Length: 107
Image (cartoon, rainbow, N blue to C red; front, side, top):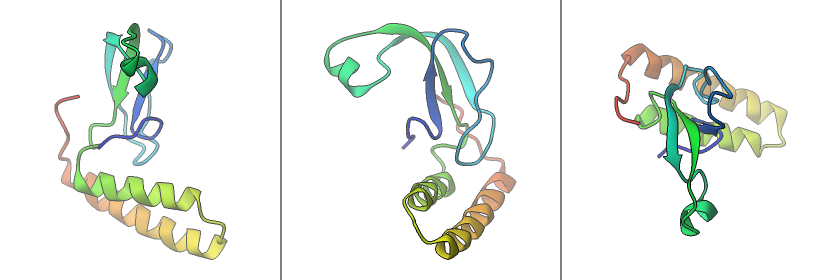
């Protein structure tokens, strides 16, 4: 599952040329001038507006989900030594995942 602000992004139309995934640093796939909700509250309220949509091409891959979980865990850690260990694990997971070159083709 994608996570807003990490591997899926919504921007105003033509605000950004491209976006990079904050998990694996890959270029996101863009869909332009989408009409719809960009947050839960807007969706529940029936709101819609035009926006651009960016999604990491790897976001649905199991390795990417694991990497996303580690990124979130690292953000909440206060121990520098544990962060370093987790960052090493994160780099290995991303490197191995990107070597497979299996992308999601639907966004």
